[in-house]
Length: 346
Image (cartoon, rainbow, N blue to C red; front, top):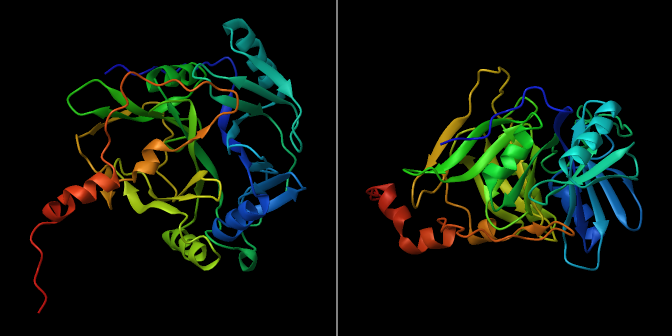
């Protein structure tokens, strides 16, 4: 099937996915979750906002939580550009192409350009943030999964190919894409600017909606330690899906949800993609496929629950498909049949 082609001479230079702004109803509960379970560090806080970062990050924050009395939502995803001149180039490009954008004031960031892309996803571009010391070697202070750094987002959209084209025109490359086996129906596409397989992922559902962000952990031990801590500090039900290994093989993972339902993927370092001739890889998805190298399929909540973007209109595609959920998988007993004969105990 045809997938969008990368513009290798983009109008401005986005370097990576870098930060995220979410709203939360109980900042104290959120602080406990992100520091004790994920192991993020508090860079700053006040009565209405919490700024967090991973243990090896120098940028002031990769996650901002803002207090709300309404529905927990996503205010914006964020990306770094190479330098301040790229913000001017981005503003000029968006003005010429009819994309709404404006410069906004954001604490601990220099100039920030906010725009809504062709799907309605709200994005903040920033060139410079205040800096904090790295904390990765102060291992005696680490907590939970001791997340290292922010990695990527997944956004639900009604047309993944159209969303991908917008970003390929801005220099993003496609690492992998998901197609329904035997068809040319694209249900997911993985895009990157840094040298691993993803900075932003688009999955075919009603949207735009924020599905999850990913933080890299150092080892499987850290991933399990985060889950162990969740059960010890009051978040035993935060684990939504996993641990497992993704079907197209790039990373071990687990998905957890904070007190407001916002989803984070904890993942190990993925493969590196550096050379221009490293072409996109098609990943056929079979009907009723589990989708993982090992483990069960995601629960229904993983497919159906996501956070709205503030001010964005959610569009329902003509057909959303019928993915195999954990609930349906267990009800069908297919896991028993696929496991083969069971050995009798002595």
